[in-house]
Amino acid sequence: MDKLTNNQIAWRAAQDIADGAYVNLGIGFPEKVAQFQPPGRQAIFHTENGILNFGESPAKGTEDWDVINAGKKAVTVKPGTSFFHHADSFAMVRGGHLDVAILGAYEVAENGDLANWSTGPKGVPAVGGAMDLVHGAKRVAVITDHVTKDGKPKLLQRCTLPLTGVGCVTRVYTSLAVIDIEDGRFVLREKLPSLSVEELQAVTGAELFIPGPVADLICPEV
Amino acid sequence: MDKTLPDVARAVAGITDGMTVMIGGFGGAGSPIELIHALIDRYRATGHPTGLTVINNNAGNGHVGLAALIEAGMVAKLICSFPRSADPVVFTEMYLAGKIALELVPQGTLAERIRAGGAGIPAFYTPTSFGTDLAKGKPVEVFEGRSYVQERWLKADVALVKAELADPHGNLTYRAAARNFGPLMCMAAAETIVQARRIVPPGGIDPEHVITPGIFVQKVVEVPNPAQEEDLNLAKATYPLEV
Image (cartoon, rainbow over all chains, first blue to last red):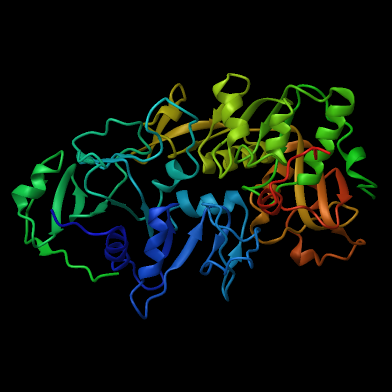
């Protein structure tokens, strides 16, 4: 089965970010979205630890370890950057000031529930800002492989893992499709042209609704 | 008005067994390494303080700073949002062995609980964690059709905070994103102890640029070339240095 690479999923998510949008990218895979902004558009990226409008990663050896992102990787200052403390930073998050948050997922449910912080009781639990980020942004999007490493659906009727947030996800960009969550159901918007709806449904753990035309999901080699 | 002290040892001399200690920083940015190491020195010399409850975003990285404080056995409980790091072995081993307790708090809730503690607000409602395991047992209220979880303030006996500039009144500036939890913790502790890269005379900080007003700060000590946790970890440093 054809599927998009992680870069292509990130590219597709980046196409929906408007010029001037305030955006938080979750640590890890979602950080890639910043690389694929369409020419002429410039989003303003927020990081929980207190920087707005930060720039790209610095060259190795030139890091300033007081200028880092939420994943504790070095970033840079650019014209228009601001610094602020943690309470202001999360006021931006919960106060509804961000336009988009793009997060990773272990599981997403058709009711918009997200599980992305814990795979169960083993080991050391860690939540960071995940539970805050799912509340407040005008759009909460998920980027993810459509299935787990062993081929099981990640899009489900109900999450089985500990929840990060209830009813919070509005759109899912997967390796096979773009799916909106509306009124407690998965609404198929785009799919890989090489894939039939039946094939997509077979690897999706809840019913896909198709109220309108389904566009071809075509991404460049990036 | 002079809140300055001559050295880090004197700055942390009043911290006693069982205290709750807020420690600023997000990863290495803003971590008051020298104040933490002064506390470890005292513990190694006297056996005190121990049984501390520490509030920080993380659980240390490598074997310096907060990780070294935990490794020394001085911390009974950690309240944090993300006890993982590039090298989390110290906390991980002690936690899995049942030698340290953990209260996991979502990062924005942690910040707001500290802010509330400093602002005299005993409880507040947040959408964060509603419907999750971390909201279990907490009161829930509906406002304008949406559910919110009640969270309580966090206060501390002592806060250890790293600043960039300080004056003798305790007015502070911070450096870049090293600010993070610093201004909140300064408000929420009965005694705030600050290490500043430079202490300037009164008037040396433009009042327009003061981030933390001195009313929130009790002690200030100058640490001219503060260590950065990331640099120490790149050099595979441990504390205390084994010689």
